[in-house]
Image (cartoon, rainbow, N blue to C red):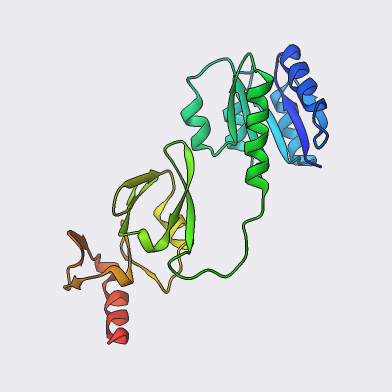
Length: 232
């Protein structure tokens, strides 16, 4: 049974969410908080599975509190303002509910939470079926590794170049590198990762993948050339 906290400086808003949750059999409201700092301390002492978090609160906003948490539960944001939607999704929240919250819309947010909790099948997959999940265009997108042409890092963002589109996701290139199989992908530059089987040609300065020319960084050249030599 998922456990929940409701965090909102408006008692009426807390009552509405509590009433909605009481209509569901599988959720337990452990506590509610009108003071965000009190909720922050409670989360450190007794974590829960899901929090309903208001954004605009005195002293500490919901987004500030979320950024300060080391171990984050699933989060459904609640607010009367649309302006924070993009920032909320960049923090990988489950959903974003606008007040006044209708029960039907509330149920949709619960469905999103439950969908995220379903375990990923562990059946063996072929290389062409292997994939990673990335957050782009305000949704989670499954990207097949075999579709990736190359990956480019742009400060706090990463561009994933695919045959028919380019995805932009807020992730460091080092983070996405750790999620890729090292036997299939090579970091050839501070800002570029390439799939080895997509390389059509190369020089000491760059590699070619289709119409793209991707530079080889000085720091990564030796490792790349060693791999080329082993490949024969």
